[in-house]
Image: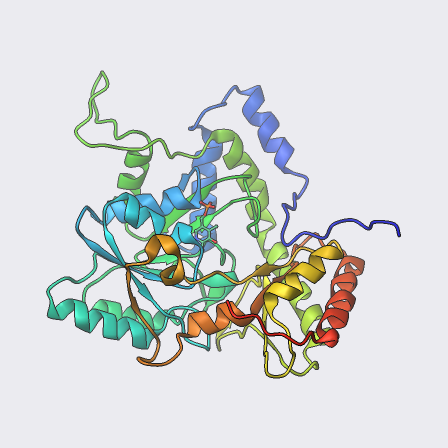
Length: 391
Ligand SMILES: *Cc1c(COP(=O)(O)O)cnc(C)c1O
């Protein structure tokens, strides 16, 4: 049998204009982590997200690290974080020596549960250990219940860092995802909705935090005629070349959102009628960027699990992926505190992880590619192997 081409989960999709910005940087010899593309990209990104400004970085992880640093997180502090996410959401808190507390998801958005957050804050207040920051993640392009979460966080005076690494271009009640918390962060990693091959950004309406972020991202150089340092900084600034790629990518972001939403709509049109499948919901008054199409497979109806499906799809040259394994289940966070959506019930994030799967969702997928995925899935799900694997 002829081996057909591999269908990837989410691959870079260039607009064709990236090279123009790169050439410009070469012609003017701005091959540095500063230069006109960096400044323009920051202005354009802030305008897009509807924030006062942006600070662009070498990765999304670096942006979270800078966000927490500018909020004053230090050794011995506590930081709350969504449990249902990629580990990069929480790692920077650990770099800073803070203790992380994980918060479960709820079913409407799959993101942070306001109920669990409130219980965690009540408990923290009792022992006089309120967190310095709450990292709220907007997974797969879907915003968390930001209004509810902000009311609770505000009542305790704790700032929210919106991890919008996966939700750039999404909207929550008319506002851009990432613009609602005290700080928002984006990622331009190769698999995200737009990419600079590697990169990130912090956005905020607080100009002071942005100035501090850029200062810390360039080794914390004090104003002096020589190298003078009164603080420890990082080398986290985005390069002028990559910012050029980012400018071209940002210009077509809305088109990419539409393309990912079309991919999602095709999947649901073809698969929604199969009993036992449940696609990630979209909260009322929000617009997901549908970065990845994700769905749950009800094991009581379809006798399989995402992990077997992944193996079988892979045999047909189709990349699928498990949903994020909750961080409170990760060996590295074994002893970390965790608040479930409802006490004494199976955590929502664990139920999502054990039954969910991500489908190939690139904006550059052809319709034929997508029908190959759909046909393969229909076959795999109809086979119904006898065992349900415990994870
Ligand atoms: C990708 C991602 C990050 C990290 O971004 P990088 O640019 O890869 O460092 C952080 N949080 C979430 C939820 C992500 O998906």
